[in-house]
Image 1 (cartoon, rainbow, N blue to C red):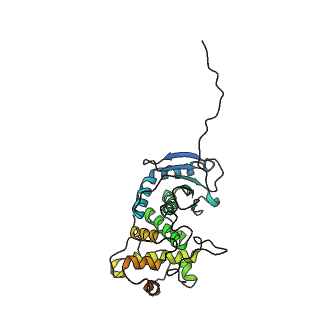
Image 2: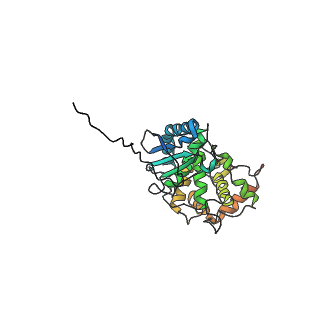
Image 3: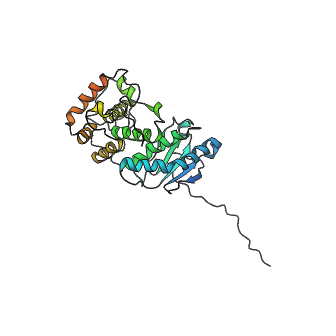
Amino acid sequence: MSHLLKHPHRHRVHTPAWPSYKGISLLAGTSSDGRTAVYYDPSLGQPCLQNALDLVKAADKVFSSNDTLFGVRGGAVNVIIFALGGATDGTGGADHASCDFVTGNNIEVCAAFGNGARVSALFEAELSECSMGGNLCGVSTGEALSRWCAAAVSNNALADFATAPTWVEKGKPDFVTKTFSGSSTVPGDQDPASTGCGMAFLSWLQRPPAAAGYPRITLPQIAQAMVALGAGGTLSQAYGNLTGDAPANAFTKFIASVNSLPGGVTSDDPFSGFMPI
């Protein structure tokens, strides 16, 4: 009788090359449609694992909603949940390498212990940018759009990320007829004032028909119009394409509406344009 002697090689598990995460990443599972593989940082214990398991269950719906928003079927992605920026309440945000499904499909999401909706929202913020195909990457318009997409799929689970009030505090600068693409000190997608202007403007575009004076514009219509315009496009151009009105009227009419708000701008949706996807 013979017995085969084997060397005890450890089974090697392939893990994605994350943008910043350097720790151990364990696979929690893959969504039923096969498009989302969810990993987590085991050092954070059961709460992080639960975030991951919740996202495995939610990912199909998030992806389906994202497909609806952009009118195209997105490619496969990997997601790692960990204490991004040291946070475990979601405030660390999310990131990825680029805005497409080829080089930007490894997504990092901050853990949000006990709040799966927040993790889904952060996931959608990056997933939506992948669906922009690089067309709106790193500019204020794309950042505002990704945040609106995150709100739409999560029942606004990131309300505390609001930037529109900051735009008002800064004097309501015009980022409707111009797009902020960055400066020597601030990247184009990390400036609260320009992002806040975009958030309030997209709220205004989606406002109820009685207030708008034209049929309600939906977020999928906005997303697809903005992607078509690309990073060089402006919110005023999107307004013109969606309403038939002259783009030059966009900022003037928007500011007039902002100045007429009874309670001012206290959130990213001052015109009650929010509609779940």
